[in-house]
Picture 1 (cartoon, helix red, strand yellow):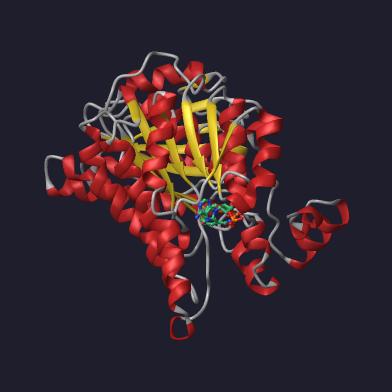
Picture 2 (cartoon, rainbow, N blue to C red):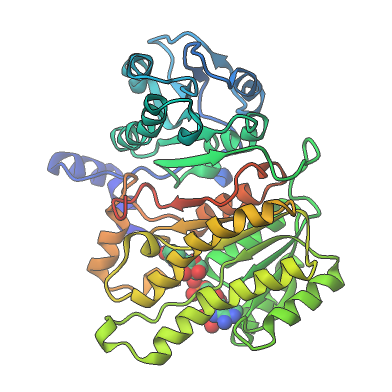
Length: 442
Ligand code: NAP
């Protein structure tokens, strides 16, 4: 659905009027389709500290598609700033952050990216080190709110041993693919399995549930565009959308209700017949909104079944039955409702918050089999689901984030594609919000 206010605020008259009235002016985001791969200008690296990421940062010069600078200049508009604070162990060292960003923050171009790199706080040698590293979250989230509306600001915690695995995440954060992701603290550790250098999604087998429309359709389209072989699953009632997608993209369609009693066995049997999956995306989800006092038992039960019990059973079936291939990826679509809670969504919020517990619990177990499991938590995304929300609540949902707008299904798909990448094996057990840094649950 189109965002008329965003279009108006960026028109000639609308820009003038919103400026004169002091109204917010969200900037159209620069996504991969419009932008290609790289940054909008050179990348400025923070000054040498005691950080551990010099080699990884050096490699970025190639991947960000832009020149790398190490000296700030007032005459340059930077596409990205990266500051390695991984060696920051006390308040005095943290002053380097102030000095660097105080000077450089105004030099970041529209659609720019800022990444601060830290060390996983619990792995610091002493309490002050842990405190300062944890403090980086507050710093980054504040910077994300101060930066212009199209600029993403992130914290990347890299555990010792995870330096080489940080590349795919830095790449994502510095690219237009992360257009609607901001204010996130992402942890990278040693990868669960090795991947071929340069490997991508080409030829990987991917299962997407709820694939016929909305976010699932966008995930399917993106994986197909990146060369993956996708199996698009949806309920029989969505057969029309599914067969249209299958005819257009050449994906295999699987008409199946994931809550059917034999769904997990059927999906495993199908997976084994295909030689297993590299990536499984649990996207199918439903809402049955009503305040708890008025909620019918079937509304509670159906949401729990589709959003939680079925994908958990399918995960168990695939993992225990050999349906996942080495260096496999499982990604669940959670929700900001699960983080912040939402009026009339006690059933939905429980089912979505449960995935936060599920990925944390399953991550170390699956790592032993070379598989990662992560979740994305979308905020307000422009789909049929959100088009059905009453106007005033919809407008509030759209604007209450640092980017002043709703995300697009492709923003969720891009985040999933990064987590699913063969080189992202160092990201495990995480929940990444795709919400333009929503004020809710922050
Ligand atoms: P959507 O447009 O309603 O699409 C969901 C798809 O899942 C539909 O095709 C639906 O089929 C299918 N599905 C439902 N129950 C199923 C079942 N038992 N077995 C197989 N497929 C089933 O939803 P969306 O907005 O794209 O959302 C996708 C995911 O993102 C959901 O998990 C949702 O909770 C989550 N999410 C969305 C937003 C947002 O702003 N849109 C925000 C946070 C999280 P039917 O035709 O039967 O409905």
